[in-house]
Length: 428
Image 1 (tube, rainbow, N blue to C red):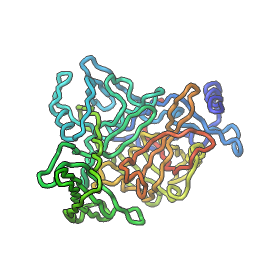
Image 2 (spheres, rainbow, N blue to C red):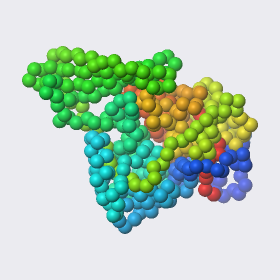
Image 3 (cartoon, one colour):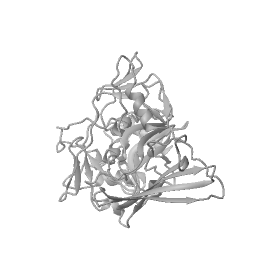
C-alpha cells in the first residue's frame, strides 16, 4: 500500500523533490558510443524508496521511473519472423522446437529457410537478452513473438574449457542464464565402456577465488558386465584463465551396487536469428578514479572497495547510489538488470563465470538492480538481482550462475552488494 501511494504521489505532483541521483547531468558522458545497448527492460510500474527517518519527502526511484536504455523497437512480420529495428536483427518465429544437442541446434539454424531467407544462425547471449521484456505480468519475453514458450534457449557462447554452452531461461516471472552440456546424447555408446550416462565438470578455486583447475568426467555404464567407467581429465589454468596443461585421461572402473540412474537430458529451444552479430563490450579501468568505462555502450561503473565491503537492502541501495560521489561524479544510480548483465564475461576462456576482468573489485554475492517485476492483483514489488561474480558460490557447481530470481520487498528483504553506474542511453 505504501508503494502504491508513492506511485500516485509521483504521478500527481509536478516537480517532486529528488535525491542526488535525479540530477541527471549527463554532460560529462561520452555520447559517441559504438552500440546503443542495452534496451529498456520495458518495466512500467514505478516503485519509490522514501527514507522517512533522515530525509522526509525525498524519493529514490527505480527502473520504471528513469526507463534507462534504448526504446524497444520490435515488429511482428507476416512472413513468420520478428524484426528488431534497434540492431536490424531478424528473428525466427514460425515454430518452437527443442534439442538436446548443440550441434543439432546449430544445424537446424544453418538449414532453416523462413521468410525467404536462409542465412540463419544461433544468437549469442547478449542478443537473447534483448528479448527480455518486463512490461507486463507473467511472461518476461518480448511480446511480439507468437512462438516463444517458457524455457531454456540455446546461445552460441560455448565454453572453451568444457563441454558446456550458455543457455538463457525465460520463465513466468523469472529469468536466468545457466550452462548446459553442448553434447549429451543418452544413445551415445562406447564399444569398450557401454552407454554414456553422465557428464560432469567441477571447478576448483583458490581461497582468492582464482580458478585452479576443472575436472571433466565422462561416465559410462556397461550393463552386461555391471561395470561403471569414469574417464576424467584435469584442465589447469593460470591467473588469466588460460589453460596451461591437461592431465589425463584417468580411467576408474568399479562395480556399482545398483545400476546408475541416467541423468535426464537437458533440452533447450532453438531460436534462430539473422543479421550482423552484436559484438562484445570494451571495458577499461581508471585506477585513479576507481571507475570502469565501457567505450562500446558509454556506461561508467563504480569499482572501489565499497563494492566488496558493504551490503544494502534494495531501498538503501537506491539511496546509496544517489548519494555516491566517486571519480569526480555525483550522478550515479542503481543499474537496470539489462545494464548489469553487460559486465558479465560470457566468453571467458576458462569457462568460469565472473565479471569482466577489467574490474578489480569482485564479490561472490548477488548484486541489486533497479529493475522490478510486477505480479499479483496488487502488483507487489519483486526486485531482480544478478549474481555478478560466481567465485566460491555453490551456484557455480550447479552451473546456474546468472540467477535473477525475484524476491518480495517485505520485512525479510535481504541484503545484497551494490555496483553503481552512470551515463548510458535513455529515451525521454
